[in-house]
Length: 116
Length: 112
Image 1 (spheres, each protein chain N blue to C red):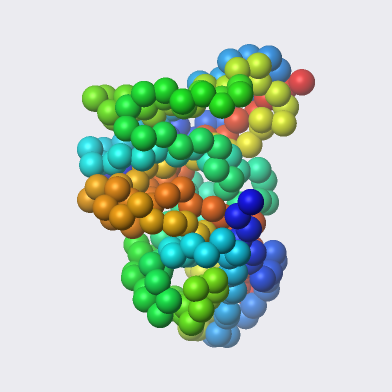
Image 2: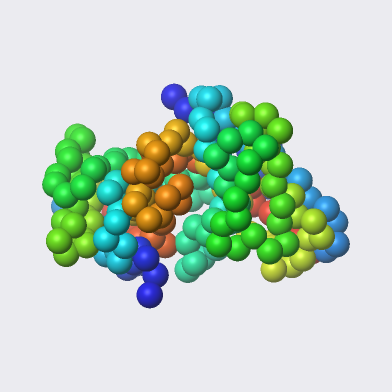
């Protein structure tokens, strides 16, 4: 079974802090993704990566950056945390089908981040 | 208009009922479609995925895609209280590139 592990289930930080969320997958997947999930808004893509050291902006990248130094690890960074970044953050990974799109994504259990 | 639309519910049914969950989508280039189940305080887990139009069955679950009407359905037979969760549909492929577009989810409650 694919396993996507997020480093923290719950995290509380203060405004202005730099926050790191870590994600590791064990299935040698090329693609990795960071989403945030908010009630009524569903899953919104923040950033994704289709290869080591490659990254692409998603739909809501403002205030976030990412790092992918190794294939199995994808980090999300909140440069200066703000209260509107309080949310559930989900990491996912997948193989690629090329032009047909992605194979299904496999998700971690999420990090519930509160910014005070 | 969102690319993938779902009724948020909640949908409440008695145990043993047949449940029908539905989505519509607007991107005609989508080729693959997925259903995820998400329990409270957990990440989404893949239930089923299908290619293009047609049906796919897995135990009590049947996924149906009608590309002509851009309609995706998930049927759950003999529903159980353990099926209580949020169900998300998704589409990918074509002009979506690497992106998978998710619906916001339908909350299902199955009463014992």
